[in-house]
Length: 107
Length: 125
Image 1 (cartoon, each protein chain N blue to C red):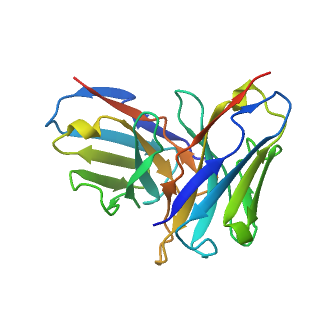
Image 2: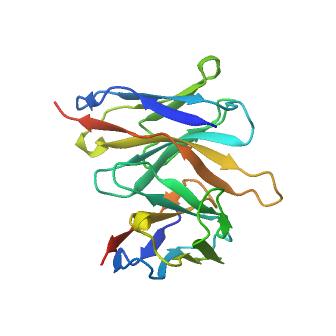
């Protein structure tokens, strides 16, 4: 199985901050990487697919980059509704695997 | 707009079989671009992919659960189902159904969208 490792596991930030979350795959996965946002009690929501493609309806302050084994999710100008847990997920092979999550909290 | 909804018992006794159904509405269930997927999330933990089924009935399961998992599809009802046998407390989780979308380009990328709202299943006597 491909292991996905996110860092940090949690972070505290203020509204308006720029936030960066990284995700590392245990092997090269090209651009087969997705990002999701999950709020408490809710299902995950797709933000970014294929490493850098913004899902329809997702605000442009979210962006993804990277390839091979190192990826980044960036939120420019953090908004109150962005406080949530973020997961990366590889679609290079089955079984599909997720990172452990990064919780973005209010400072 | 496609919507997915999980249904099934919220409480299962140890050693019994967990059974859940996902009903798909508002879109094509038999498209060759989709895999119908089950994912679970242990309380306060991360996400675990259980397996998926193609509309034709072909399946792939997570090797960690393969001996206990069966996913099936009922095209006439636009539903797919999960059975997990011999459950223990470690199977207590929120279970999500989701659509695994594959794009049609030269690079076949996949992603999960949309997801059902999730259903909590507790394994306890």
